[in-house]
Length: 197
Image (cartoon, rainbow, N blue to C red; front, side, top):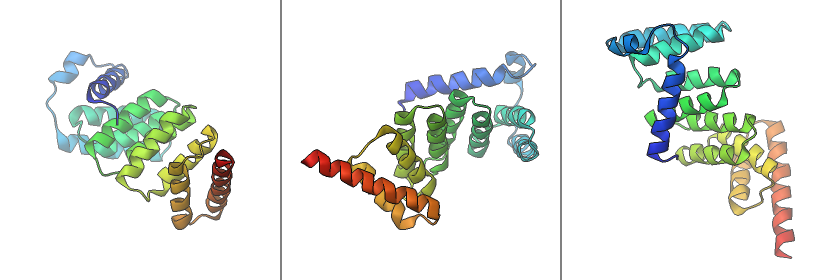
């Protein structure tokens, strides 16, 4: 996981970026009392907006909800998904990281951060975040799939990659993904044999 000081700087950056999306001055927003019930209502409206395809409204409502209660992990995660769909990968990762900090056993936020890094072309960071997700749940299939994609793009053939691939083959229900993991297993095993010769 990122070290605490870096994480605090990243979260502060996200909050500053979120503040720029509102017409209300920061001083006015910080003076507003926190209201967890209002936060839930706003987050529910944000999800409805997202479901309706109105990403701008969803992002605005998630930001408003988090100003009322910044401990709503699902709102951080969903905000990250909306930002990732807008190709705002850095902001999305910040939101996913905040969600992950609030839910230390949930593999989804770290998986989503891995997906964001992967889409942005940062496969080493992507793999690192998929590994964080797998520390939370070793059989989280989305993280295994993401790690498999990143491993292939990085041309890795270490024992960790082989172990993840074999585990994925044990639990993967989708035939297309099973085929992907079978090809990866063969590639990794061949690369390991070649390295030993």
